[in-house]
Length: 191
Image (cartoon, rainbow, N blue to C red; front, side):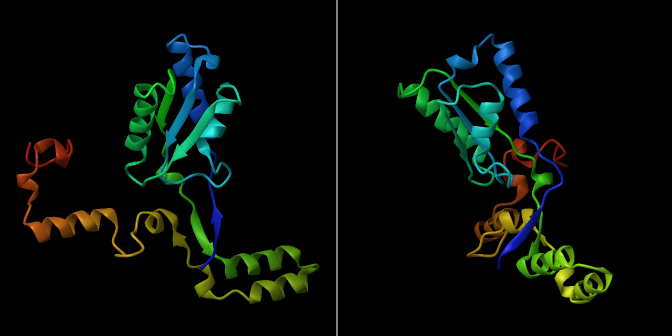
């Protein structure tokens, strides 16, 4: 099923400000940066390679490498290990790594059929034709797909990561009490 996305706002300029501030605080010239690696779960639709957009808007020269790592919740840590690998292997001396997620900005999706009907309303000339196009909508057309739910659900098992953790806990008999205290978060009732 194809989807039409709706996004509330853009976030790349904010991320570039953070990188510029980092360069300023570390007294680094953007020309000294070899690479920028960004870990992100859901790339914004207007920046398929968010790292590239961030690097350019932060003033890092266009001939430098900038790429995005996307591995769901492992994205930020994967970007860290990629950056460390670049430096330790000698392929780079200065790498900026950032985790740049705003999961509240993952779009709400509508079906392609909804999009076609919506465009039909927009293209309709005159009030009667617009009303006719609106009349083609059905209640089922208005049911959105929650992008974050779709993105964090495994397409094979159809389980979210949280449900997978709970399933593994049951299968292997591991209770929350058996986990290190830090794994249960600061609001843990075991404190």
